[in-house]
Amino acid sequence: MKIWLAREFGEERYDKLLGQLLREQTALFDAVWQHTMDLLRREEESISEEHLAAHIAELCIDHVLELIPPTAEGVNRSQNRFISGVLAKHFYKEPSAQRLTLLRASAPDFTGGLQLPKARRPRPSDLLEERHKLVVALESNGSNPVHQTLKVLEAIAQIEHGPRSRGEATRDDVSQVLRRIGPVITRRILQAFRRCVGQIRYERKTVGPSKFTITKPVFEIPFRVLRDMGESFEPRKIEELICCYGYLSVAESGSYEELLDELRRRDSETWGRCIQQLLECRDTSIDWPLRYLSRIKEPFYVQRCAERLRQGLFDRINFNSLLEYLITVQPAAHDETLRSCYCLLRDRVRECEKLRKGKERPVNEVTPKPPKGESDDPFDLDVPYGANSSLCSCLWAMTTSGRGSSLLSGFATKRSPWRRMSSSAGLVFGFP
Image (cartoon, rainbow, N blue to C red):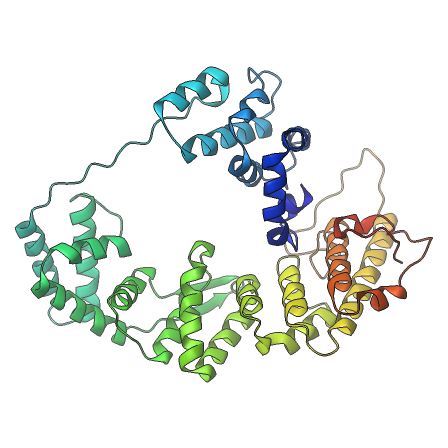
């Protein structure tokens, strides 16, 4: 449950094993369900019902109906959202009228919003009308390829989703239309797309603290469509696109890693500059670029990674990715980096414990929360839990590195205040 809640270092490593255990051991699944309901009874803002519901729904079978209360009486808002979310996600895995009836009969108070998904009826296609709309779009702005592209995408959105559609066309919409309108108009559209991609400048600009602007995302579509058609782009243009849109959406991260792999094969210097820009960008998290480097076991960033871990230049979001990258690549003296990082975190936890004791207030006095972005903890690690969990991650890394036993030999002590802190790492001895 701690892995799910905090999305800790190692979550992906354990997901497969946890899933297998919960699917095979009904008693364990029941215990996890009950523990989840107990946690949600507290209604803490830090606990995401949606996140937990997604994990449970992925693993559960109809046996879950036996665990759900017959009515919503006595169920708080967090528990209600969790139960409703689990049932909805479980139902939509295989929606059918029979299953809908079963779920509504078993848990009527939590399934009121469930309904069978409506089958999308294909709109009747009038090729002459579609071709006319696209020709008008191509000719409406003279020879300006950027305006032509915008008008074509607007026309495709209306063709695929109706004349009143205000949404933007998707990459799939464009592909569907190009497959049926014939080669002549297709060539004209692709020519406009090609000139647009060549003329447009894909860029991400910082305009203030935690604020940035990007080239309109709609202009990524012509690049993607042309690439699907087999077109090749200069490394500089690929770098532009990755640095503009890369990793802004986790769901699309795989498509940018394909581009990074291509860039790495074709131009290692441009690839390195692109990766450096993604890793040093303050507008987005470095979590996913680091996971990419870990996957390909590329030591490009390892010296900077070790420096950040030794000096505490990390936060609760990117700490685990920095740590995983270090132990994946295992550069020279990485064991000493782990030792330094552990000592840094250990000392910080002790310091925060002292600060907490010095700030104890009467029971009836409310302690105001610090403004967003301000904290006693310069690492922003949710003291004490965040720092403690980071220590556990660091200890786990130390045990799995090449010289784990020698690294830990200097830390064991019988009087450790952190004696049970490392249970999530599978350790049973104490640490100072």
